[in-house]
Length: 166
Image (cartoon, rainbow, N blue to C red):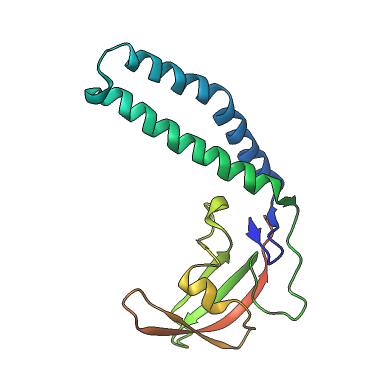
């Protein structure tokens, strides 16, 4: 899954199907299950000191948040491959290989995409992460800088950038 500046989220068909199935489960059977847990806990008596009731209500809140996230995500989703950057610059939806501090023996390859669809076969960095935002817009051969959590700057050289294909 990748996001573009037009607020469109590009998903593979597999990712779309998985997220759609999760939404259907959370909107149907999971809602029924949590409602039953809340009702059972409510029957136990005093709600102020009922840990099961409060846990079920918290679970319900998290579940409803996930339903809203998935609904919004799927409304803006397009199935297929994200279009390649017209000028060859690093963009969401690309597999990027970088060398840390220009040392071509210290490299890593990652998918620049939302963590919503983190593939298990390749490391995924969000475009909003420090490294992700540091490499976006740069081209192969460019040096990019990003800020580490301790406030220091780190530099990487972009060795390769190509559109992701599942």
